[in-house]
Each structure stands twice: as C-alpha cells, then as structure tokens.
View 1 (cartoon, one colour):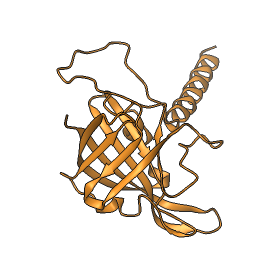
View 2 (spheres, helix red, strand yellow):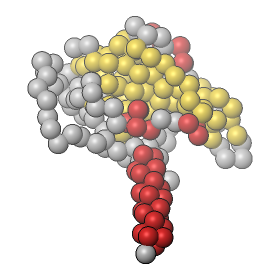
View 3 (spheres, rainbow, N blue to C red):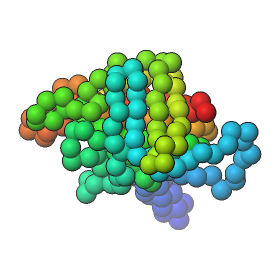
Length: 190
C-alpha cells in the first residue's frame, strides 16, 4: 500500500510539473486578487501610436492577440507594431507589451534600430485623442528564443512597465525565424 501511495504521489508531482511548465509558456497577464493602493494615477488607454525619439520612430499600433501557435501576433506589415491586448494597457500597472518586426523580405522594418536604445532613453505611447504616457528605458536584453523569459516580459505586475520586443540574431531560412529576441524594458515616468 505504501508503494502505491508513493507511485501516486510521484505521478501527481510529474503531472503538476508539466502543467506548471505549460502555464508559464502562455503570455497571459495574471492580476492579483488583492489590489494595492498606489500614489501613481492610472492613465491607461488603448494605444494607437508609438514614438521613440532616439531612433526617429513614429508608427501606428495595432491590437494583437495570439496566433495559431500560441505566440503574440505581430503586424502583417513591417511598418506598424502590435500591442498585446491580453496584458496591461499602457499606463496600467503591469507589463504592457509591444512587438514589431526587425526586417521583412524587402529590407529593414519598424524595430530594425530597437537595439540602439539604452537606459535613460524615452518612449512615448499615444491614443487617438493625443493622450500620452511616457516611459524611460531601464534595461535591454538579448535572449535566445529557447530561453525567452515569458513571465518576466508579459506578467511582471509590480510596477508600470512597457516592454518592446523584436527579432535578433541569426535568421534561419528554413523556419523563417530568428535565433534571438531583443527586449527593451521601460518604466512609466508620468
């Protein structure tokens, strides 16, 4: 009887580990059931434009969900960027995520110079009415796709973040994917 209980316990542990690992791969914003009071007013809205003065970027933002593979959708063109609608809105507490292409078959795309951003650089997000939220870059990372920290990028809820993502590294023509992702981490300043 003890052996059976031990085997059942091991099976539950394995199933729980697999379930937890799969849960960590989905880019879903998890909100706490307990809300904390913060002195920073919420100015959240659905974004329409992204402006990054350092790299002379001023582009449209489209709303995105998940594609058939369970990954964040990106625009079909290389001009616009996409905001992940299942995460925080810009101005909300949590991780607002915007992604854009590094390049296309025709050449450089909207986030081709994203890797030039450094801590202290400003990022602005606007809505259709001209309402603005401003962020300042505090970190830049390059991750192999196999080590992409989904929870850190999509589910960090302890502050007001905007994380920008694009491809980097080596392009594989067989899969049409790059080997790495550049991520720019920024925090709300207004």
